[in-house]
Image 1 (cartoon, rainbow, N blue to C red):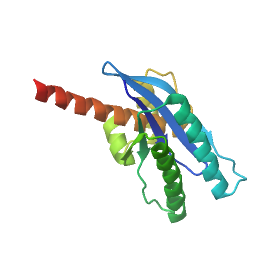
Image 2 (image 1 turned 90 degrees about the vertical axis):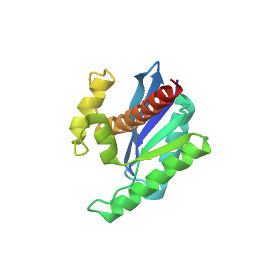
Image 3 (image 1 turned 180 degrees about the vertical axis):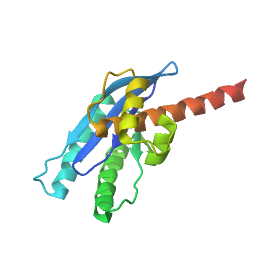
Image 4 (image 1 turned 120 degrees about the horizontal axis):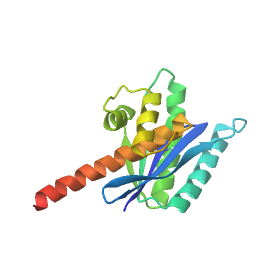
Length: 167
């Protein structure tokens, strides 16, 4: 029954989503956002992020972390900041001896919604339906849950292959 922590990293807001895979079903455990203080320096926000992730990892004890791969958008500075936040996520997961998996946003959108070009709102709606949630208020949290759900789908796919080979 693996527990998967999905992370949508950011230098101001980081989304997290926790799911558990049990009996072939993906069950929602929790989700939310880590709000980093705007007035803080960038370095201090990275420290805040690391401390918050330590608490989340200690609380939910994930077996795996699924994190968004870096992408280059229109603003290189934003990409560099995202890279630093991802580094903190990967560091904290590895420090806690948790397996890390990285996925491109388009791959996750394709895997969860069927369209790599799906909007954040479409992802939010599909993830809420998949996890039987009334609503997911923050897009950062729904993106993080999508990361976790996508990893769960990958586990299920790998398990199906193993079962087919054993037959």
